[in-house]
Image (cartoon, rainbow, N blue to C red; front, side):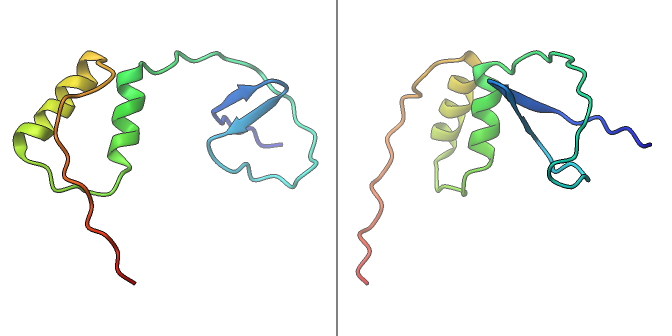
Length: 88
């Protein structure tokens, strides 16, 4: 019998795993809970920001965003130009 260590998030009686287990649906398993520290807001926000498409930001705007995320500030103060209208 092989043992796998997977991580996930508890939501009520459900555990959402971060990766697919190599087991068929309906397979009974034993679960040992080892609580992990929650990431800080800044760390989660940084991961979310890193997953976005690249934007055309000035260096000062990018620095302002990085400083705001590092400090845990909720809203960085930058000006963003509106997207051009799609004419399709």
